[in-house]
Length: 281
Ligand SMILES: [Zn+2]
Image (cartoon, rainbow, N blue to C red):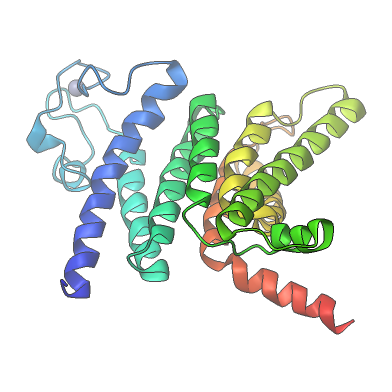
């Protein structure tokens, strides 16, 4: 077995490389372009990015955020996504060890990073990410232990018999997706009836299928709560500071994504604390 620092360093580098691929997804998927070809090029002068200029984070720093050929600025989003992915992967390793759970949460992090930035850049939450992520969450649930408790409770009270653990875990994933997406659908439908215009896209509803399948019902509800709080505080602050009108469209998917990642790491103790409050009464 390798010493932990070496494993951590390897996972960090792997995260940087995955982040580099996520950048391609973020830029190309919303426009319906292929993520495989052509190779990356400068959007301004069309010069192909050479392999030695394509090292995550390092190249951007060495080139001082400009194209080597035409000196057009390269968005700081690129190194941010690479660094963020690496840190999230390291976080999954530190929090969950070298386990299937860590793999599941690393996959979740990668999908969420794409959605956070496509929504921020273009107000798009691509179906291909939402639906393939939903499917991945359902499949991975079979290989991880159930932790939510909702499906186990239902099985005990409705069926009167315990079910195999993978079935319970899968049922938690389905429940999470159903609870999350139907709650957001109700909110968006209610807003539409009230104001007669779209307040929230269907993309957010579909994004909750993905988030719910990975997190299960309780953590999904916590994500919606935290995402709405983040959106209200950060979003309104941004609107005030930048003096955008009140019709400025906030990237709600970005806030849901940030909330989902925070809940992934820190949500379980919060849910336990809340449940213990309910028990006392
Ligand atoms: Zn260029």
